[in-house]
Length: 297
Image 1 (cartoon, rainbow, N blue to C red):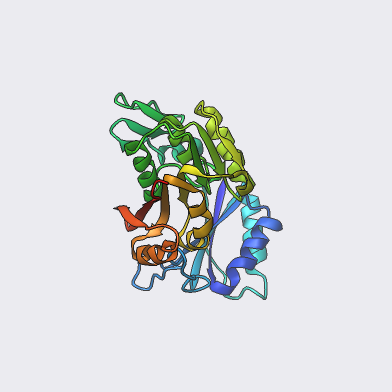
Image 2: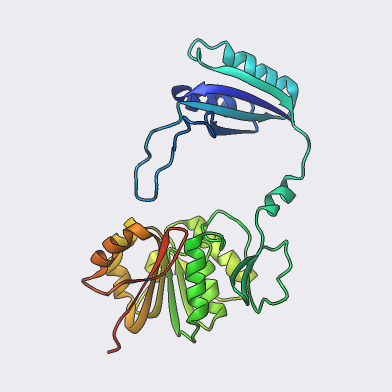
């Protein structure tokens, strides 16, 4: 395998990437900030709910992988000859050592401790000796592997408040990790819903792998009221969903929200005030877990 490395200005990144993938036979193309680690490094992605500060980096490094040297050399020759790409520069063209990419990828995901006895464990690891509750979960297309602070806080709340909930709603279920955790901690009938068909498929597969029964489907699957409603999304959709999510909470029930930056907590309290009183229950890495309880009828 051979790697072609190019340097390109902001306006060239998209057309060069398209040419590499669609016409020149690249197996993959990655784009990096060419000025990363220097005094002129610039952030490309904004915080959640904030627009990107700029459409792209001023200078980018493009790394394209090819099956052989000939294909990489042809791609470089053709691209550098284009009149529309005067600012495209060749950085290198080198052989890439063979590696066990599966093993390298798996090495990035280790077991995650939620509590001393509750762990999230990828399938290629053995559970720790002191693990009593284990969710087997591998990285996939849907959000939720237990590594993100928002997910960890939700999981810890479930573990610390474990109860035989007769019904649970996981709204925006992603991988289904919160719904699976609820099942392992006493929940009975669990609705796990998401707008993304890939998330629903992932949720069903993960539930099967963990030996729990979930009712996975689109949001219209959720009906009636629940003693526990979980939603780990982001602040903007959570604000829009406030009346809907609050309506799902039964008298005496709990609402658990995550995906909220600490600085967004006050606006969330205001957004939910007509229905329920939110409070910050935990914080982790700049994120807040917010909860509310409806008074018993």
